[in-house]
Image 1: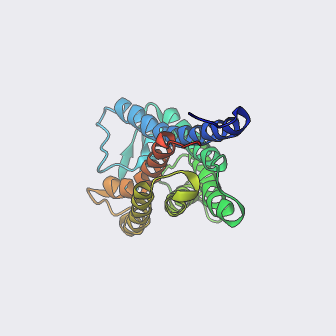
Image 2: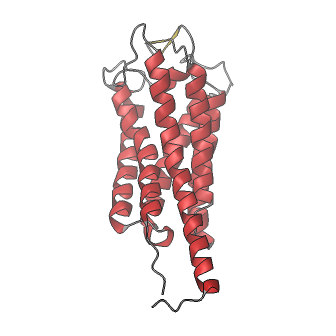
Image 3: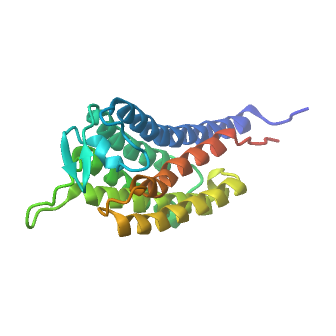
Length: 231
């Protein structure tokens, strides 16, 4: 027979709902990007968009134009740019409402999450044209891409390391750390071949970007499925 008093069970249930809300938002952030990318790529038919060759940023350029040696013509560029914006903001919100983090641990999560959000906003409002900026001008799109990839992968690593505080299983936490490390290493590889015209440049870029999407989805699913035992 369960002796727990209603006033004792209520806060536990409330915390459970808060955890699940954070998990749902993290899942949504990753899915928003994937969905926007899929829709924009499906609309690009002449010639067909290539996930292995074309840059992700090309999906946000209506064109037709050329940049970094690639043809860019995305009929639904607004969908991708909206996806960039929403995914960054959504993942920041998901990280901000996570329960179980205080002090330095909370700031360790919020700082890279904020960097990711800024990156998403810059990507959404400054589509990449591939053209060299004017002398003295700031390339906001490139800054946004760098901020989003670095901030996102660092966020995935930190969330994985703090798994026991936020309700993520140890197995998922370890997988997230591996994902984030892969993303950062792939970023170095991507920067070394960017603009070279390599056939698999789009694939290398996705190895750097997709951990930022898969990691939060894994974290969200783990948090959502977590069961709290009450006495």
